[in-house]
Every structure is written in C-alpha cells, then in structure tokens.
Length: 553
Image (cartoon, rainbow, N blue to C red):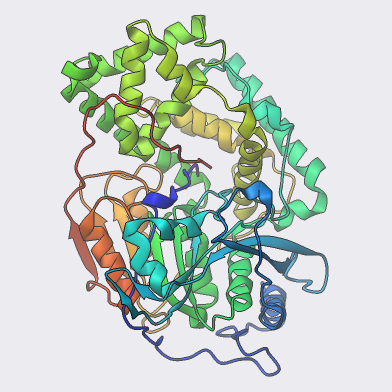
C-alpha cells in the first residue's frame, strides 16, 4: 500500500503537565531485567508464533540490561548536535534470538523539562515518545527535530523524542533489490489504460525485481515483515528502559502499532494512530491497495475542483473536467518531448500523486502545470525530475516497502487476477490504479514465505485508551480503515477531521485535532468514543516556491 512518509512538521503529537501513571503495571518475567516487561500471555509451546514470542522476551530482557549507548550521530546523517544517536540490537529471526543479530539506528532528544510558556517552571518527564512515520520503508531518525518547532515544545518538555530506522531502512541492516540508478531513471511512460505489450514489459520488470530482492538479501529476506517490526518495537521499548510504551505511528506505522497492541497489550501506555491502515487480515495488502487507488481518484478530483475554482490564477480551466484536459495535454506533450530530457508522463504522474497526499502541494503543482502550458517548463522540471543524489535512499525505501508487504500476507500469484481487478478499477479510477499495480506487482512473484496477518483486536480492559486520528477524504489510508481500527480496539477514541484529505493530520494547522492530541499525550484523556473537527482551511492559490519536500515511501 503506497503511503507517503508523513513529514515531521505535519506528523504527530504534543504534551506537558503532570506525568500520569499508566493503569495497572507490567509484571517482569522471572529472571528478566527490570524494564523488560513480560508478554501478556504465553501461548502453548507448539502454537504458531510461540517461539517468536519467547525470543522477543529474551531479546527484550537483553536489551533492557544493555540499554542504548547514545552518543554523537554519524556525520552522514547531518543531524544537529542536540540529537543523540545509538543502536539497539535485535534478532534477525525471533525464533532464534541467540542467532544472527542486526542493529537498528535510534535517535533521541531528551525532554527539556521546561514549560515553554513559563521557563522557570519544571515539567515532570513522562518517558520516551517513540514515533514511526510510515512507509513501509520510512526512516524516522529525523523525528526528534520536531521538538524545535513551537507547537511541539510542550511535548518536548515532557518526553524524550525518539525516532528510529526500522529493520531494512537506512543504517538498520539496509535492503536493496536492484542497482539504485534504475530507481531514478527518466523519462518514463504512465498509461492510464496500458496496452498488452506494456503490461508484459512491466510484468517482466516485476519478476526481475522480486528475483533481485532474493539474490541480494538471501535467506534474510523472509525476516523483513510487520510482525518483526512490532517485535523490534518491544525490544526498543525495553532498551529505552520504558516499562510501557508511548508510541505514535502514522500511516503504515498504525498497522504494526496495532499489531504491537494486539501482541503486547500489557506493554502499552499510550498509542496514537494517525491515518490508519485498514487492519482486516483479508485486506492486507492486496485489497487495501485496490481501495487506495479508488480513494486517490476522489482526491485527484478534489485537487482539480480547487484548481478550477482558481482558474483566474492558474488558467487551467474553470471546471474539473477542463483542468483534467489541461493535465492530459501536458502529459501528451511530455510523451513526445520530455521536459529537460528527464520528465515524462511517469514523472508527471508521480509529482501530481502528491496532491492526493498533501493539499499544501496544490498551489505549487497548479503553478507548474500553468507555467508549462504558457511555455515555461522550469517549475515542472524542478518539481518532477528524478533526483540522482537520492537514488540509494529511493531504492532502499522501495526495497523495504516491497519486502514488508510481500512478506506480510498472501497475494494473488496469477497475473490474470491482477489484470482483471485493475482493468475493471481503472475504468472509474484511472489516475493511480496502474501505477499502484507496478509498485506492488513483485509480490505476485515473491520467492520468500508469506506470513498470515493476525487478527488485530483488543477487548474491553485489555488496553489503556488509545487515540485514532483520521481525515475523511484521506486517499493513502482511506477513512474506512480508521473506522475499522476503532471498532476493533475497545476503549479507543476516534477524532475525525471532516471533509478534508491530507494524509497525516497530527501536528498540522487544525487546532481542534491538535488539542485532542495534546490532551491525550499530556494527561491520557480521550474525547469519549468519537469527536469531530471542522476542516482545515483550503490552501491559498499563491504561485510560489515548492514547500519543503516530503520523502515518500
């Protein structure tokens, strides 16, 4: 499921005031280190996952004893001196916790202990707040920088802000499936209704990519999946000396966060799920991708309607249909003559896909389209051209994305099923459907064993209150996912931003959403079962420089 990584400035929490003790307590297993915490319930020795559960307890006890030796960050990460970096060691295979180990890169900024509104007032520390920005394939080590922003200073006063790179990402036993230079090649095509010849070409590429993953990673490939991401999170919790976890996951981070809550309910202190993946095991991941492609068509229509309302600024047409014709006109021209020799229809589609994730891109994409039609390809080339300097990072993110989703669940192995389902879907949702197929198609030919997705669920009293945040028109993680997660997690509260679709609503411009988030993280208070917030303002139609880029996974 293609999900953009939520940019730190738009992507999670707040806090201050008094520390609130978590309800109940975690009981350490006999012989365990003080902060290892014990699994809530041990399955029968021969039950599926029993060995991995025992291995997680072993790894967590070891991590609690060793801790994390935080120090200066590697120069390559280009992080300021206020951030400390370290490594937590986890088993590659939790069924064999004393076997091969891998290191996960961790970053931290310690709680300031200060009230930003009253510098003389000390704020009690509430522990570590661990964040995952999504993906799969997103590097969260930059998350602690969020504490530099004004809105986050209350949270940074009470919590250590902790980010990390999940297994396979960045410096955490990185994966790669092909020469990184292939990931930034351009120009490429992006037919909304591809020919049979084009499909055969892309099927061959998907087979080759899956084969490359197996050749480069070997037998380790099978161990990069969401269940292990949840287990890694528990080892990280123990290494941070936290008896119970305070966590915020955005996008894909909500899925393995929900797995964590299901697998380790007694280890949960507070959890925020921002823009939730639909957790139904039958939808992980093939069905969710079909739903995502349909939802992107609606958000693409939202952008075109906005551009039409501002025809006086951009001149793209005064109806959504006319704006679409302007876009298609540009795409056709780029197919004949790529902008800058590198930007073809594929790069155009990828750039405009971002309008479905974040509406703060709307003015800049509309300006680029308008300028191109007026004879200036510069803005479009700048926004859409491949970035060779990011080739290794781009390929790493894609490799982890593919490995996790392919390993997580069964996928159709017959190309005819993909072709039938997506040909039908593309008739009503042409904008993203086939691009989404080509991203995920290696899963049809995946050489590693598949996991069986667990049934995410928590009954009454099994978890402390959790908080779910969602936008009604989110395309990357459609709103039905938030409703389903809310139904499955007893005691959860759902806060909905009405009528908007920006992916990742925490920490954005909506004071109502942020107020609920702050109350939860600082005091543990949730707004009953459901609350709604008025939509954020639409972006102003001001042609200007592109905003800070949001890395995508």
